[in-house]
Image 1 (cartoon, helix red, strand yellow):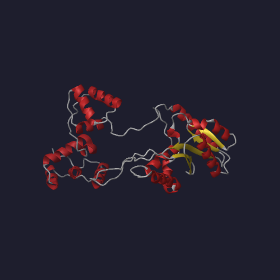
Image 2 (image 1 turned 30 degrees about the vertical axis):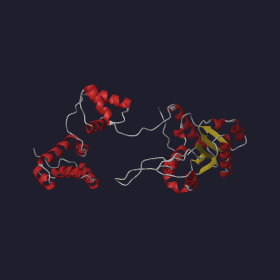
Image 3 (image 1 turned 135 degrees about the vertical axis):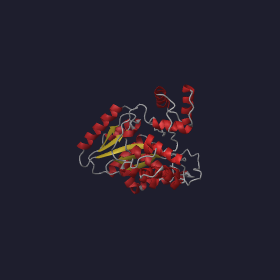
Image 4 (image 1 turned 90 degrees about the vertical axis):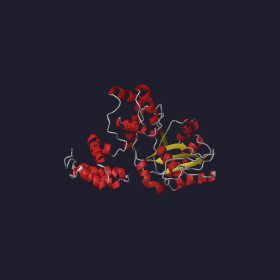
Length: 343
């Protein structure tokens, strides 16, 4: 049966036309043109003649669009067939994928074959997983012992603290970082067809950096030390006091590392304008400077090869010396929006 003309809404036509302008796959472009021309009242034969395709192909495109809309039309793996699994089997499959987190579609193919005696191709099972609302992505490490209630309480206290600050008070997020002299492969844009290769080195040397981040003006204070310990922490505190001579209080937000609670640091704080506010245990997600460390790694280490340690150290320290050049990028990255981790 010939489809009636004007079966598309104006919004649907606009979406298809916009996709056609961006699409580089000729097959998908032909599918879009087929639906738009049928909507204009063209017959299957006319569309097939114009696109140098056969009528059955045009009929299949129309049927696919009716069954699954734009998503099905633009899915080259769409089969249009009824699902081979019944609802009970689909529920079992969803439980398996949610619990086991298979690392490949092949594992899901094998699970279906073993438990239901049904064969799926890789492309078909990928389409099935998408329909079941699963997507393939990389997992992200989070602290396994984080306490969501403690984190929420800390953020509430932090908000109160910020509201009660005197004009001259400063809040500084502090932490130590240890960038190591070795290559760090990462995602990046490489010329098509070229191998994405990165020279490796066996560097074991690292730079020990103790740092502080001002959450309001994004100023960064760092010192390089042989070790991150009580002595280097005191050195950082002294540098912060020099940097903010007019601050009545400098509130240092930090984790629960032992050196922050050491006798040496406690004695120093007795005669210091610095006050420590500890983060909840296992809560690096609430320490703003952790984002700066990750940003530094992206800029200095990702897909970069430094033959000698001195070159690596120079690049790392240069990042901090010229950090103002990244001001626009850091504004959005270091906003005070925190995500509570709830394992």
